[in-house]
Image (cartoon, rainbow, N blue to C red; front, side, top):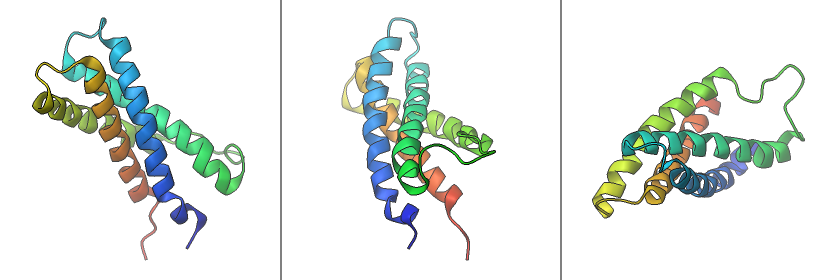
Length: 135
């Protein structure tokens, strides 16, 4: 079992916690600017995914291969940005609809927190699939 496989659950927990905190703060910060709540959820989800990816990169991956990317490697490859967009849209909208079922009308921090957690977990699942090697 590789070191990355041993740290998958740690990466998911770190990303989910970071996503919840950044999503809630993003929801609060964007509340006055973005009046459309589904758009607020997607924006909070995207910011949470980016923050979770950075935290995962500099904690989990830094412990595996040393600090920073190797020579000639990008920190954020193109497929990661595509996965982040998919996760932000899907997780943000699911977070918005879940927040509607719990509280009506939901506060912006609650929308952002749920959107951030769900988008971050979706991003982790997409990245696990991206890094998996077929036999």
